[in-house]
Length: 117
Ligand code: HEC
Image (tube, rainbow, N blue to C red; front, top):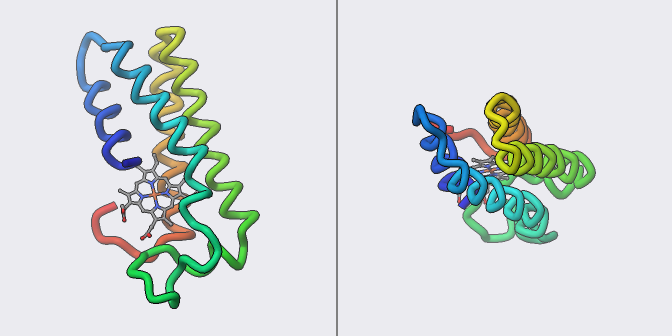
């Protein structure tokens, strides 16, 4: 879900005339996903519980750091929503880059290695 929405958002950026309505709805979807993200990882759902997952145990041993990483994402998603509401292209690009960084920094700490992301 996160991956698909972020991609849809990136696809919008490639256009010379931005479709603000589409960007706004993607930004809002990201906003919602970001606020729900912490609830996707309840205690007892990690590796070693018989679940096939790349979520690393540190999510549960250091929940504050994980919540913080999730909060960074939410913060950036809200920045995107704002930028879309104001049709502010500069703020949009700034927040989009920072959003990508928020994805990556959480993955590098909390997700087992992946070859493609
Ligand atoms: C707070 C931490 C965190 C943030 C922020 C985060 N992710 Fe993830 N993401 C994870 C974890 C942990 C997994 C591994 C989940 C698993 O394997 O069960 C994951 C898995 C994924 C996957 C693999 C899909 C799947 O079902 O295995 C994709 C795609 C993805 N994230 C995209 C994104 C994108 C795009 C963003 C930013 C818009 C993002 N993520 C932000 C923690 C995060």
